[in-house]
Image (tube, rainbow, N blue to C red; front, side, top):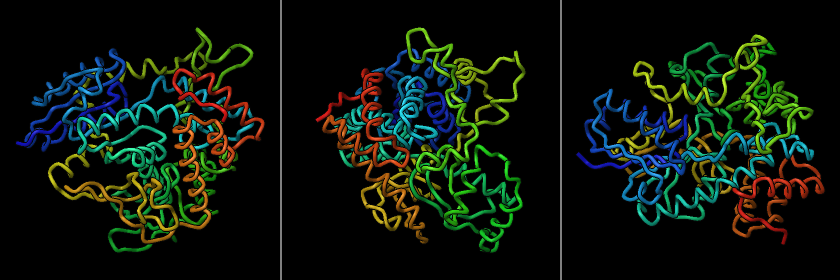
Length: 461
């Protein structure tokens, strides 16, 4: 058996770390055909210890021989690694609530603030330094390893690593699969019955082809009829904007309103739950001050969030984490993410097709720069991971929207390298959800003060 080392960086992450560990323990090939070592690394000793205890209990219950260990030392974790799976955030919801609220207080119409809009730019600058630290350590101790990234903002960070280091990096996201679920709901078909081609920017992709795998029939005519018949308010927060964009551009987008809407100026008309995002009462609460709470994150206005009795307990972030780390062998199931299938394909030299990855374009999507990171279908094999060129062109308006984001990617990279508030201002003013010039300058100063412990030290030049 060949030796394989997988490093999980940000192993305190609840969703991606636990999902990757479940996929590993359920893989027959990684159990029987590889001498597997798993290094769990996180800067928070308590969090990585929690994941380590969960992993040990799970792997022991499956009689899995992998050697698992924990560390807070990045170099130790990465030395000799074949693959690094990375999902990092520091105090995610605390800072994300700032990314959301502060730009809106200064006039931005952004609806989410994670991957697009002014808030996403501070998100990028916070995570870029640690991401580069990981990649540069990989250049030193495992230069041939693959960097498999789940950290957002996905496209911005993957592009920066691909431009500033020699490390092979691929970004993964399940957003396209969320779109496939929506297609199935409209068409009243099963996932395995539908073929598709799609791509664009992470969290702003479009299905350019959908067909019936059984007979090759183009399913878009049927989809148009079904979409017309569908209840106009059904799953409003998830797909109302998607349906409007389908009418505007002629292709159905993915993954949904709160993500696609980060890149357009008109999204708020289709997001009823906008006011629930990190909702708080300014008469009673002062945000982000000592002893104050971080408002609850609400993904969308749906029954799981809103249909509660007056005195019914709402699940908190802490209770959700506690539940996630309570091991139950009967509930161990595939995450449906792509990291472990990619690792198996590269390591064992298989060839698999992947629904969506983030990589430099290199001609895969016509009309976009070759060095811009885009998202579309890919192939993974012993040589690595490669985008498949799209056979249908995206609409001009979509290409234009994505191209603007590509220029924002460049400006953010320059802002980081030059420690420049000026370049950050240029990026913000280019965004479709920008505030005014005066508001943008004030917003930058306030955010840099609020997040000074975690942002690079930016200055007006």
